[in-house]
Image 1 (spheres, one colour):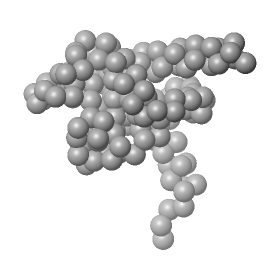
Image 2 (cartoon, helix red, strand yellow; image 1 turned 120 degrees about the vertical axis):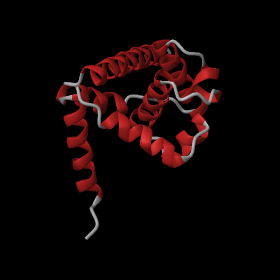
Image 3 (cartoon, helix red, strand yellow; image 1 turned 90 degrees about the vertical axis):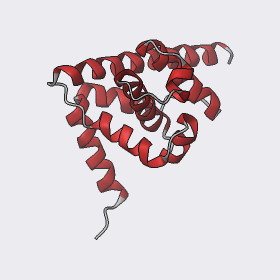
Image 4 (cartoon, helix red, strand yellow; image 1 turned 180 degrees about the vertical axis):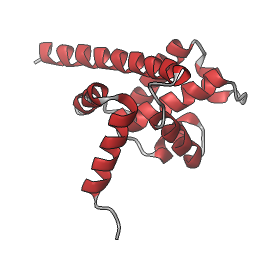
Length: 151
C-alpha cells in the first residue's frame, strides 16, 4: 500500500522536527507560505548569493569548481535544501540551477535532513543554515513591507 500525500507530509514533518527542532520547523512552515518570488532566477540567485556569503566562497566556486572540499559540499547541500524546502522546487529544477544530476541533489537534501544538532560538526552547519534562513526571512519581511507601502 502506497503512502498518501497526508502520510508523506506527516513523515516529512516528523523528520524536520527531529533534525531541526520544533521551533525551526514552525518557522520554516510559516515562512514557506510568505515567499512571493515569481521568477525562478530571482529565487535561486538570491539563495546562492546568501549561501556564498555565509560560506565565504564565490558563486563560481559553488557552481563550477570540481573540488570536493567540505565547505563547497556543505554550501551545495545547503543551497539544495533551502531551494527544496522554502521554494518548493523539484530536485530536477534544483539540479539545473546547481548544474548537478537530480540524484546528487537528492543526496544533498537528505544529507541536510539527517544532520544531528547534538553532533558538534553538524551543529556548526545547522547554525549556518539557521543564519541563512533568518536572512531570507528578513528579506521576505522587507519585500512584504514594500508591497504594502505600494498599495
